Length: 590
Image 1 (cartoon, rainbow, N blue to C red):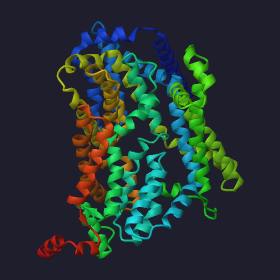
Image 2 (image 1 turned 120 degrees about the vertical axis):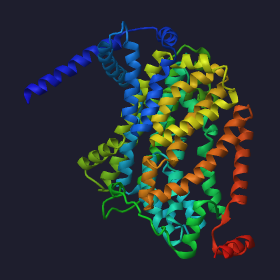
Image 3 (image 1 turned 90 degrees about the vertical axis):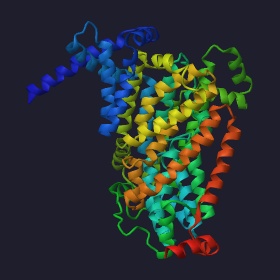
Image 4 (image 1 turned 180 degrees about the vertical axis):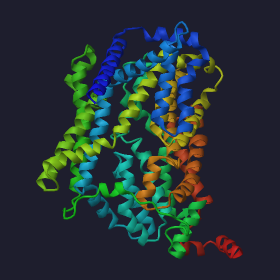
């Protein structure tokens, strides 16, 4: 046993020495990328292509990203035709890139803030804060409409994590929606529709660190190393058409009381017969829901959620200002230094401070401070002991370890794509062939397909973002156009993940709502595809043609209202009786 341990330790030391040597190499990546693009030609697309194909086949994004990195490293190491040497060097290069990604302070901060927010969520759940908020809202639900709106609103409140959303909102609202004869399929749709779509655009969430890290890295590949990735993320929010439209769509169907497709049948069944599930349904149950439950006897208080989340938000925004303020005051821009000295509280000063801040550091600091506040609150209320609090916090962090793994591999794939010159090759052959106005729509569709097949939006973002921003910049260097294209990556990935039957959030939404998983997928995908079509036809294409967002977005919302009004049919019995057409149709079917 000791001999095996010695050999294993020796291998690790060997890999570390080789990998750190590789990390020490200081080369001009841009020059190497140009040479590799010319040398390898179409082979430069092998890493992302292999990652995409394997993602379809294996349904495992970790394996797919790893082999994508290895294939790129193999090409780079293939000198003189020595295949065995190239294979060994490609493995060492993979280790080197992962270590390099982890050693970067920005990347380390992103991983730490994601995991820390996961720990904070676990503490809040164990203190009963999330349940208290949900139960206080549930008391206000008196009609099917109000129950759906409150479920939607609660989903917005749990904006910081899609997993927590799926596992908190469904179990809390299920007794209420069951009482008011709302189908489990509709409950699962509302839960799922306010999970990833809201977490993906929230200013503070477990998603934002990953999204802004991809944006920052992709902009660096086109020479814009000083870009404010957090600012780009905020600019992309109005262009996240699928996210925005599906959140509005949920409200429209609830307020107007109209549905269409399989969801109409599910809602009519629930309203007229009281059957919340179909006759063949096998509702899913979740052990993870129980894990988030507070201990028996704990007095529920909404402040156990409001205070820690409030500390997180206020701490983050205050941190953005002071971090940016210190960065500006320590810089050489005299105009900005004068602005921060004379008018530190002006809108311009706040905007510049936010732009200069390091989001990865600030978000980690805010999440850590909020976690400390949550632990102190829990201890003072005897919700748990100190040792239990640390264990709960660590367990919450563990739930996001897979996020860290995907992050490291996505960054590694991005670096190998950059060194191979993949973006340069694609730009050279596509920049004059793809119409500029169609690129965002094509990216959205491509991201949707990959995400649907793999069941993960993170991997899809990691594959496409390093390719999209350089290509969009080459086609049109207009900053708004590049932001539009970047938003298409983020939104397409969420759409595909949202309606994929193998997506973790889709599965967790079925579990949290105690709905048959296939019934949830069948009813939701009809709506998801409809909203995605609206996002393309009335969002990305008009925006790609240069129509201002303040015209595009309201127009898309108006068309969505018309869709629900004229395609949807009333689900309530009293509304149905007022529709002669519906009565005649159902009489004929009978």
